[in-house]
Length: 382
Image 1 (cartoon, helix red, strand yellow):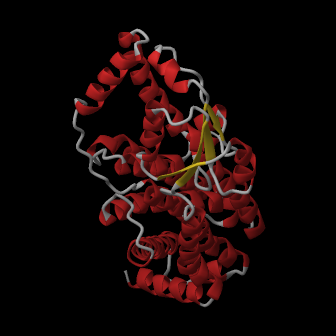
Image 2 (cartoon, helix red, strand yellow):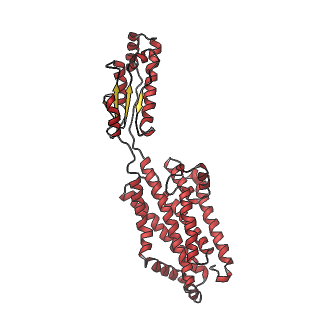
Image 3 (cartoon, helix red, strand yellow):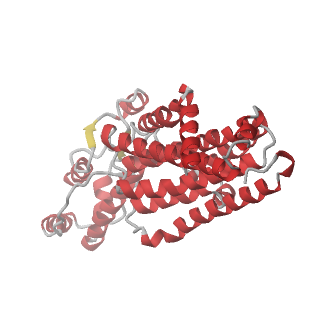
């Protein structure tokens, strides 16, 4: 026990001698939070500026459609002339414009509504909700027109009754948490990459001390190889737990990001991933004959797998084949667990995800132990 504590102290001191390690553990994660915040800062509710060209004059029915558009949430409506449409949209003063053609009101009375035009250069992100709302509203008016059979007086009577006798709808506005969830997932994605790099950096001490002969001098003392490796694992896990705790605290307390998941649940799941990261780093060390070889394996494994798992950008943006490959990566299962927890799924229902993370950690540890045991030419670590 005394030897283990001495080795832990020695590893801590050698780790904190390098300022870069402090940046890797505690500064870079904060930069990741800042980057995720900047990426998603433009998201959220915005007011849409809508221009309406009324070519049907002052018909009451047409004005009713215009008023209906104005009642939509986050919609600023103004009536404009047709010759102004292109200039106002091109200059950015309007997000979209609706053109109500001449005879539009009469087409509703006849039960066969004329096509209206929606012009926008921003695509479906602006026009999608508007089209859906207008189609529903116009179809309702057209149904009234078919019942009136083209009789304008009868249509107006039915239309007034339709407006008066409509069902009452109680509404309650709630905050859109998708932005916070996206910030959280982006931050966690960056954190996973840094955890993998951090674990590899600390485990790399094993190779460096073997190269500079420190390892063999230690083994000539009462310290044995198992104690040596165990002390490195303890330091690695301790540092990563501190990294996780500090990152989550800063994200929630300072940046005021609501992850939608309890702090301790996030901490527990990330610690499971820390075990995976440490096991992977030991496996890399076991299969590496030098620090340069270990660095090459890290570059080959860490960033590409994190990219495929969705740590850098949403997995949904990737081709279907790439999304299938992600299922074989531990980063995917952690991000998938967070995503489901944010949707209200209980931790118990996600036990399979947690078991998969544990299996990854155990499998990689066994691979590392086996390979260490075969390294007879350079004296095995265990």
